[in-house]
Length: 360
Ligand SMILES: Cc1cc2nc3c(=O)[nH]c(=O)nc-3n(C[C@H](O)[C@H](O)[C@H](O)COP(=O)(O)OP(=O)(O)OC[C@H]3O[C@@H](n4cnc5c(N)ncnc54)[C@H](O)[C@@H]3O)c2cc1C
Image (cartoon, rainbow, N blue to C red; front, side):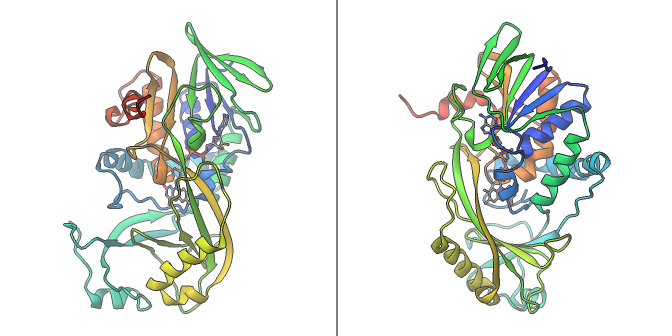
């Protein structure tokens, strides 16, 4: 095997976006994935770019805002390399807000809601309209993969990183195909970051999300996202999935299990139908699950591992990895080349993770 400048473990949206950014800065990059690229959380996602979801930790806002500002260039770069243009599917989100929350945006009246979405049963929800986009992560994944393949990035699917070892100015990386040395290594293995054999003890854990898709009935033309703390309904309005809605999602702390349970899908359908009764009878197309990479404070781990100057990590994006991919690639590349990141990375420092670890 040849000796790359930099090696990434994990070909999800985070690993491949970072690979592109570093390639554009002149790095020779190799990316290993234990399975197929983009076959895990990154293609299980709904695709909301939910920077202003009231459930987000406030410390996420600077990174989320940077990502939103980078998204058009990110999609242009992918288009230039792959020839594939990824459209936004929606441009607004009808977001419910809890009764005791002060809201900057003006709350919609019952008349506004009836005009906007006559099929909605608002019950006791208060709603605001957010300026927020969504895209189809499967479309994005195909284009991102084609973009990476159009470069000299060395993508090695079905090759797990078994262990890493820092030596002098390099990192020794062991895979089933052999051992290589890279000047720098980045762990982008998502929910597997802590489970990956002999990587340092990193507090990232899987949070399973089950979802399903339906064919929207003609009586329910939905052109924006509908989101409450319990359920979201995300319509596809462009491309091959037009006319579908993605409905999700469970949040489960049960390890690496990805089984889909009809009873859980039925519960999601009931929650969605409580808002839009027509969903109760909508034809189900698919059901699936994915493993979000979660940290105990809800913030990603972005930076260098304590005491290992060539060993970086970019994971723990939990419910917002699609949103945060362009900014993560940008700030990690800036950090890796020794520059000043565009946003303050101290809230995301892996060093803080040591204090998140349970006491022995
Ligand atoms: C149901 C659901 C809905 C979601 N909805 C949204 C949404 O609407 N908006 C949003 O922004 N985010 C959403 N997310 C979150 C988003 O999908 C994740 O935050 C994001 O995909 C994480 O990307 P990643 O590249 O870190 O992880 P992944 O896509 O999981 O990629 C990690 C990769 O690492 C590989 N790997 C693991 N171990 C090793 C190893 N030892 N060696 C080599 N490779 C390895 C895996 O095979 C995998 O390909 C959702 C997630 C789920 C599950």
